[in-house]
Length: 323
Ligand code: GLU
Image (cartoon, rainbow, N blue to C red; front, side, top):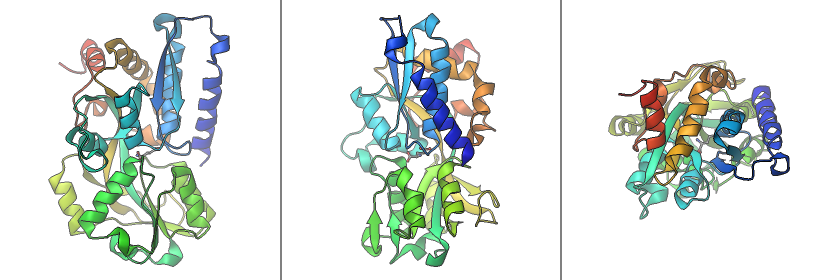
């Protein structure tokens, strides 16, 4: 838990260094980054990206700040409406947005663009040990957090519920808690299970593992096989064993990729400055959170389901990362 809390605190401190009162640059241009809950992975990594951008402020005049949000769905809506400039989003949520599926039903976002991918996120089911939930099917009759409506987690959870035949009415209780509330609710015995699509390890899973008797359950079976087979943006993956107390064996599930998105209307220069700030500080970035420790620059150009933003493309071509 410690690494993420420290990072979140560091992000807050870094933000404070760039308060308007301390700036002599009245012409500063602002970049707002939509992240997730402060205890997740998007938030501290957004803080890190902003620190890299702000370090070059004298050269480019951009000032970057992060905002805590409900997650992927909220962030895509915010960048498309112009409320925010860039935001984190799961690769599957990108696809739903582009094609008008799930939370984007009736409002396809054809101008959604990707800057880069960041790191793998796994669909993770955390359960109370006394609830005896070994698979998704065992959730029938249980109290489950189906997710914050602004999260990618919620959209993916609904899809998994549909493919595995679990209806909302089958649950004894369906809550819509924020990320920060999930582990406390589980350990206070208010819910039996929650899902979270996120990088590992992270503070939320650590909190659930250390505050009460909980485990990560397997997410597998014919419904999941079909989901992965039908959708190229889903891939099988496992939560490693012994990463968290209470979960000794690797738990099969499936995953997506965390990405950074913007609207096609975001100026090319803005997208370029952000992409350059991150890629030029890549080695430092990898040290900031264990969820990004093993990523490569090449992977960061994969897994997007929407086209790249021209500003990101400009940087990739300049560096020979793309032809
Ligand atoms: N992937 C999550 C979501 O959009 C957020 C993960 C995080 O905050 O680290 O639901």
